[in-house]
Length: 366
Image 1 (cartoon, rainbow, N blue to C red):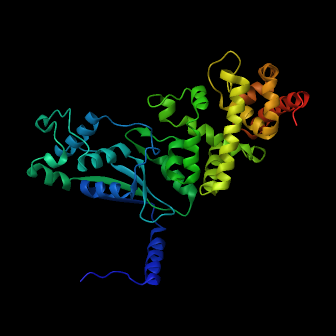
Image 2: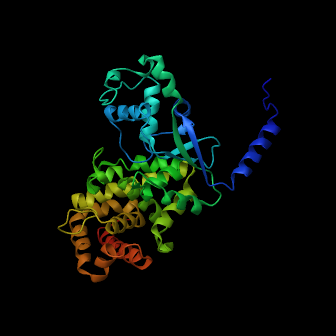
Image 3: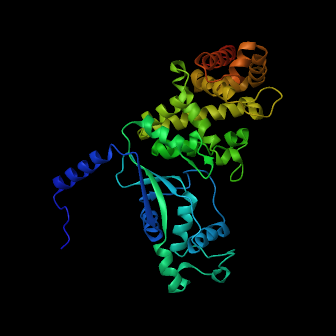
């Protein structure tokens, strides 16, 4: 006879006991059957959202070769998962999204095998069309999963992410944040990262450019959101500041998120109207500088939307005077060298803000 927990109080108590028992663990290793993994993906328990991990998608041929590896007992690298810190029984993919997507696609009859080399006779077949003698053993094949369990210490969790090196390719900081801090704020960041002007200036060209795969556009959005109201309190650890912001605002309400959206869109729109294709770039150069992005975007945020029109009317003067800032040794160094020190971050924003304030005042901005 199967027993179930019917009493709500008992159910909650059991869940709380389970959570407490998990607090001391960091990693859990298990071998999961391919059919089990398919069910976890199909049910949404394992989130393989396209926003997560590197922005890439395997071709049908590459997906098929993965299936062939299981059929021919060729070792397949493990998949790394992270247990959601809020939703019990929910997992995000740290590394291995394409492997899980390929497995799920095949077992749900979406993938037609092609390009197989050792088992060419299976080309053109879906899972259901495989001979039973092949289909049944395949479903029992296992893939190792290494799960980072919920941790009470966010810094410990982040350090574990940083130490994971799978397939010789280390996840960069933004890819880690994208998995570690899922929620409404993260969704907003990736929505704002699609702004055409931002992507153009950063040379983020989906889907093939390295900057796109490494989520540079998302990191620049996060730079702005973190520094817009926090640059004066910046202590010198930019990575830490980004992480702290993601933790603090991860589940911000709709009103606050809309304020962030409006602020970013207003400032990126003003930057485009004023500096055009020279925005975020040193005079005569075609490479965006993170330090100059900070200076221009945060200064526009500080000066306020009411003065943006005055600056746009005086765009020629703004362009000239902001370019002249690079003749100042301190600004040049603050924008290009050691840009993450508190003194240099504040220097470049202060100097740009002074230029914009003077011009907006002279142009009759309210």
